[in-house]
Image (cartoon, rainbow, N blue to C red; front, side, top):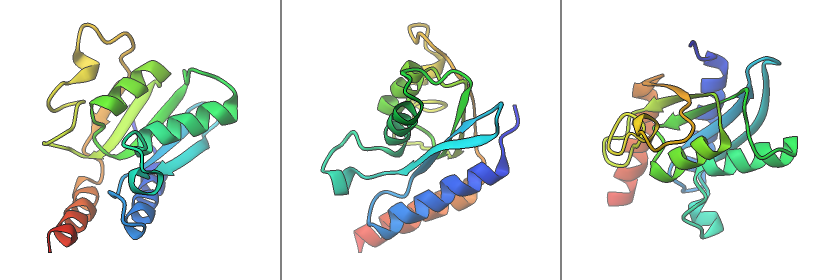
Length: 152
């Protein structure tokens, strides 16, 4: 399972867009493995939408399903700059994405390799392949910078 570095960079560009809009800088991309095409991109928009559900992963899943006119994303991979939280891991499972590649590990609210470990749980109905730590330093730095500015 090898992620596409170009797609990881695009996810980071969306995290930068979120940062510029004063949103928690997380970016996500859904990619079709066979055709090697980007299907949808998104970044966090909880502030803009005044909606706690508007995480990058949820938004990109919604965009991809709408564009493809499907409710499941078998054959697709998610690239995201931060380890998904419990809500997003649940959405990923329900969407039946094949793979999840993420950048920074999230010690506080991550739910893939931290905390709840949703994809390792026996009650999780669909368990995608997952791998984290891609461009971890870069993806962590933008988050650290964002929250440091908030605390000033």
